Amino acid sequence: MAYADPMSAPKLPPSFVQLSESVADAKRLGRPILGFESTIFSELGLPLPHNLECLDRCLDAADAYGVTPALTAVLDGVAWAGVERSDAAIICGPAKKAAARDLSVAIGQAWPYGATTVSASLEICAAAGIEVFATGGIGGVHRGWAATGDISADLEALARHQVVTVSAGAKVFLDLPATLERLETDSVPVLGWQCDEVPGLSRPVKWPSRCPPGGDRRRSGSNRSSPLGPWPGRATGCGPGSRDRRPPARRARTGRRTRPRRRRRGRRNRQRHHPVVLGALADATDGRSIPTNLALAENNARVGAQIAVALAP
Image (cartoon, rainbow, N blue to C red):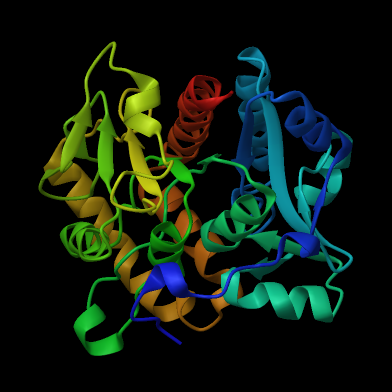
C-alpha cells in the first residue's frame, strides 16, 4: 500500500529490534554507529568468496574511524541491528531476501536468515535510532515503469525514515532521471559527495546538490529536525572509487547486453533478481564489475563512517 504522506506510514516498533552487544554499548556511550544491509553480503548479492571480502572491507572501513558497524538481518525470526563479525559465515551464506514489507512475515514465521534490503535496513536502523546507513547502490525506478509500475520500496523508505543513506547512487541499470524525480517528489534531499554526476550506463545525470571538498560533514549529512518539521532521510552519493570509469558509450553497450538476460531470468523470481543482474554485468564486463562493486561498497562505508563520526554526540 502506498501512503499519501510517507512520514505518516507505520514503522517497525523498537521492541521488535534486538541490538547486538557492541551496538548497545555504542549507543549507551554515545559512540558513532553505521548501519549496513546484509543482502549484498549474502549469496543473493555478490558471489562467494567476493561477498566475504566485501563484508571484511566494509567492516574494516568502519573500524578504521572508530565507528561501530550495525549489520542488519533477520536471524531465527529476530530483527537484529548489529550482527557480530564471528557470524560472517551465516551472513555470507544462503538467505531469503527481506524487504521492508517482508519484515513482519520474516519475524512471524521465524525465518532462519532474512537478508535485509535497503528498505528493510532503513526500517531497522530507524527503530534502533541509528542515524547513518551505508550500502552499495539503492533501488529506484525501473525502466519501463510507466507500464509496469515497478518502483523500488527503497525510495519510500528513504522518505519515511530520518536516516542518512550513503550509496553509489541508484543501480546503474535503472531509470536514473525518473529515480531522481521520484526522490524530489518525496522531498528527499539528494547530494553528490564531492562529485557532480550520478554513475550510469549511458548519458551523465547530474546530482541535484553537491558536497564540496572540505565541506561540513555535519551540515551535509544532518538528518535532524528542521525548524519547519522533521526531514526525511538524505541520500548521499559517493564519487571517487564508486563509479564505473568506462566511457559512456561502452557503459551503454554493457547495459544493452545485459537487458535480455535480465528480462528472461531476473523477473521470474524476485529472490534471484539481484544475483542474475550482477552475474549478467560480470559476464558483460569480463569480470571487471566485481572489483568495482567491492571498491564502491568499501568507499561508501568509509564515507558513511565519516558522517557518523560528524553526527555523533
